[in-house]
View 1 (cartoon, rainbow, N blue to C red):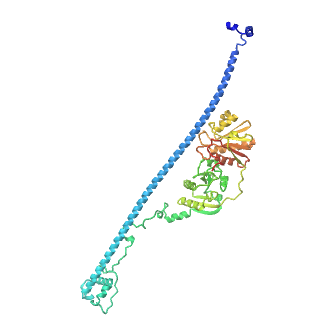
View 2: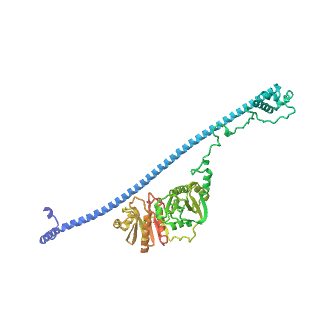
View 3: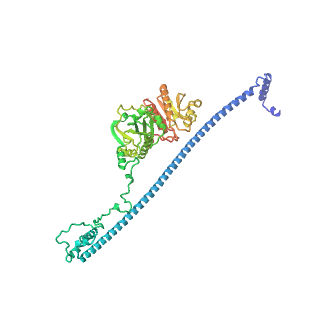
Length: 564
């Protein structure tokens, strides 16, 4: 009370007046006033918590996206590590094979040197034997001369006293000894008596007789007649052995010369029994040369891109009606580049294996790799002969390309923009992003949602892969290409092609003149953004549209203008 009395008079009057008013009014009139105040306070607090919850959810979403991104990078690193391990194992096997070959070659060299020593020893032994034989012949001739000097009988009496065969043998021996030593015969002519002075002696053989009265034939032993093992000339080379087809090396060489047949003809007028082939880049743009005709005639670009072939590999199509195979040798990364010989050789080897697997008998090709790729045809033809030599596959090289009207020039124009898709001017422009069936919020979608606010509408979209999401917010046409079931899977280029056909119809109907795409990375697909550009060309080839590719900082794939 003392405290209340100290209040100023005006304040006490106002207090008392208020009390009197409150006592005169209905006590139940303001009974719900505090409740309304509490309700208002609770509503504002609820809004505050909702806003904070939304901010927290966005932060969690960004963190989850970062975690997913790190997981993708970790998966890519694991794949690279496994690839390097496999390469190391391959090199280790190659080293072991080379070591075995070196050991085999060393053993072959050792055997060669052993044969050399054996040959030299045999030659020395033969020389010694010939010297001994010559000495024996000389001794025998001297003995015969001494016998002829000491005897004083005629030929008739000598022959009569001995058997016929023995006498003939002995007389032939005497005659041989005289012919072998003419000097001794001349020295002893004074002491020797002529056996038949009036009768001419018959000519006898110059060879010594054997025991049967026949002259001995001294044959010179050749190298092949010596029993010293096989000679070096008898060792066959591997190239001279029979081929795996059962023919000789000459037959295999004749096969090599008849593998390739060059004619002047249109490649696309060959029969459907011929498989066709040509070289492409891994992006499958095929915008120049004979590749344009392949693209116009056989199309199916999304199916080729889904095979995900890199340089050194081969993609193929099988025509359903005729069963004809079309092979695409991926020899380079981009269509605007030049192939490496190693990648070209790997593609040819894999192409041969596919032909054998598909039981191909005839192939028609242009001079592959020798147009804009500028490879040497002699080198290419030698490689083809080497790979297809024993396959019984006939390759026909057509030197005249298909004649016809030149392909139409693109009405498309391409612009590269070093900024995110959300910063493009949305007037008359279609803003296109890559989406998945599980509605995962990528950084591209997050930036667009923050600017145009279509998150709830996007999350309610329930269509599957290959469907097109479309919404209009603040005069901006926003499109989502649902091209995979889960966000951590690779994109399906067949689904992208289907979505682009639907996008083409909507763009025409809405009179849009610009299309904006944001570049993206796919851990399992090289040049994923450039391959999307290939499908855009395939869908909007004749449309007068300007395409903008946006390159945010987090994308690892290089812009084509910056690529070296």
